[in-house]
Amino acid sequence: MLSIENNEIRISPSEPVSQLKSAAPVYKLSGVFRDCCSISKPFAVVRKIPLYEVLSVSSSASQVTISCIRRHHSKRPIKTLILDVDNQERRDAFVEAVWSGAYANVQQRKRVIVLLNPFGGSGKAKHIWQNIVKHILEAAQYSIHLEETRYAGHAADIARKLVLADYDAVICVSGDGLGHEVLNGFSRREDAIEALKMPLAFVPAGSGNAAARSLYNTQDHVECVLAIVKGICTPIDLLSITQGTSRYLSYLSTSFGVIADADLGTEHLRWMGQARFTYGVVRRILSRTKYPCKLSLSIVCDDKSIIKKGYMEARSTSSGLASTDARDHKPTYASGKLPPLKYGTVNDPIPENWITHSFPKMGTFYTGLMPYMSSTACFFPTATPASGLIDVLYIQADIPFFSAINTVGAVDSAKHFDSEHCYYARCDAFRLTPEKTTELISIDGEKVVCEPLQGEIQRGLGMIITKNGHYYSHFDLDEK
Ligand code: ADP
Ligand code: MG
Image 1 (cartoon, rainbow, N blue to C red):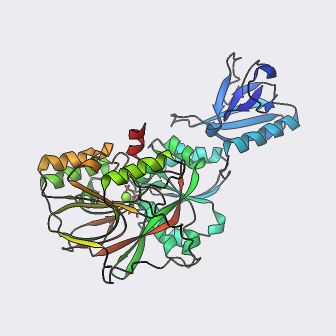
Image 2 (cartoon, rainbow, N blue to C red):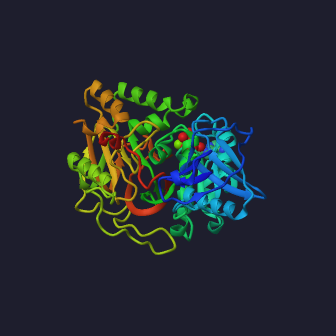
Image 3 (cartoon, rainbow, N blue to C red):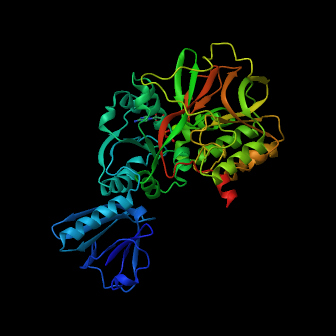
């Protein structure tokens, strides 16, 4: 017999109804229970399938078929269970109850466009798609349109022309760069505001998979896709950047100095996968390279203890708003093009209340909208999805060598946050003016021209599929 209790399907071979403790509905479906490949042996214990793991359920002439995930089995990620049941009414009631339990508050059978970057990371995206992602989405009865990107910028072109009404989400099988392209494709549309409401999801298949780690807390492809299928559409802040005469969007990071160099200056080492970043960082620190620049910050809070306390308190309450988060009501954007900028562009005078300093010996300037900047490095542990603020840090190049290595090396456990060498603030805008035009600037891991740029947060302008409405941060582990 089958019952649905405590978010599980319980399959009990002989348990009489009266012994089931809760008042949950019981589906007395008696019949032969089989696995996909073999008639199952008689079983004595109660089998339990968490509803979170159920992708779909369907009924045909005399059978109920349940497709669920096989966790930690990247080779065969789907398990199918078949139950022979004659009574149609019971069959239908059970099927309906499973669907609504498995997708409580989550849209079922989404229509998705999957963008796959065969060039990302060490080129494994196709393999990941064919062997894992495709099977899970099909088992969840998704309607899938697959597009392999053929050139850099292709994903932006697709996003610019996408018929929004045809899809419920965009899934990127890539690194972080494809997400950047999609958002910027959307941003150039006449209906940018509507397009940016299209939820974006990430399956990690690049060398920089910061978004997937921040959203799903794992690099395991089966877990990520399950989190996407069962995930929550969550509004996120976007950074509107102006540079020269252009304006574009960022959802992840801005880096200048050691980190940008380590990322963009190691393109030739793509074969190394993620290790190329570590190699790049250590090399730059060893050579004590300086990156002179001027920084102007619109600071909301730069007291680390207040920032951390606010984050921890917010995580333990249901509001999710850190005390340094902008408290104003979330803006509702008028439909149409990108919203106007509160602080003007990089070509306007710097607002009077911003703090400006020159840094002849800058080592790393880094801003982040998500906690993780790679699958392990938690550079911005207090970043939250729609706070209206961006986390900003810098580390100067003239600190002792071992301090530099220790500070950067501490990012996996977010210990750099407390380092005296690391400045940390939450801001709603900033301007970066590099002194030389020959350095590298990276936005979301993508190279942009080395010219002054200004970024301003636009609260809740984007949409992303998270596992549970939050970003994952190493600080959450400290709490436990
Ligand atoms: P990674 O994490 O390895 O950087 P990304 O997904 O960020 O992976 O993509 C890296 C770059 O690949 C992006 O700049 C993107 O524009 C570019 N790109 C996408 N498709 C192609 C392609 N078919 N050929 C070359 N470059 C591509
Ligand atoms: Mg990238």
